[in-house]
Length: 218
Ligand SMILES: C[S@@+](CC[C@H](N)C(=O)[O-])C[C@H]1O[C@@H](n2cnc3c(N)ncnc32)[C@H](O)[C@@H]1O
Image (cartoon, rainbow, N blue to C red; front, top):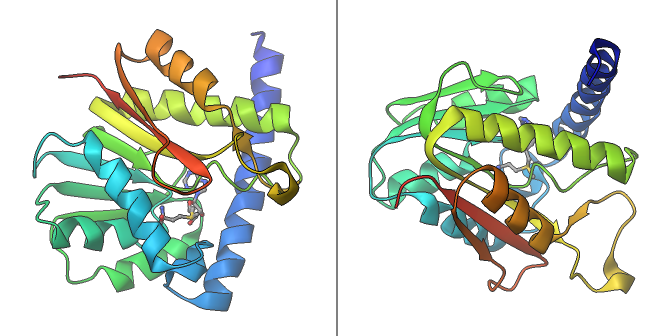
């Protein structure tokens, strides 16, 4: 990639991040620090996603970066299930980070940062819901953006990472133009070839989406 191409891509990503941040800030303003405020239908589906992502952990410790943490729903879910590790939540939206700090004020060993990338590394990284809403960004540009975020997660998580995406196996009459439906088999193959030999594809939990777990240690 020439320097000029890299600059163009960087500028495009910044524009995507601004649009995505505005979109979720709007949801938070409308629905508050609730599943609706991060654009989920209900708490049940939000927690079902968390329980899939949680499978990346070996046990109840270690450190975690939560990409697109929203108001910090995952932290409460993990603490309530006995996870005692160090947590860093990052989010593009400043309002979301403010809401997360208030919502999670009573949890220990947790920090929130408004950023697209973390300021430290961790054992694990997860991302729930950050690849779904592409607004009016082209599918090609969104795909490139997603690949860069995955590379960043891989770089910052030494033991493994996990993420979810809407699936291209969704019913066609229900698919929306502003959402991104990823190819599960492509991403499985990509993660195997680029990140680790130990990759799981979970596509058996009843939502129109899938989770990929990349384990660097078994
Ligand atoms: C669908 S919401 C899910 C929030 C949270 N993960 C949950 O499940 O409760 C996605 C969140 O990720 C944030 N976000 C989207 N793309 C991001 C990115 N590339 N980096 C950091 N945050 C991002 C949005 O601002 C939003 O708060």
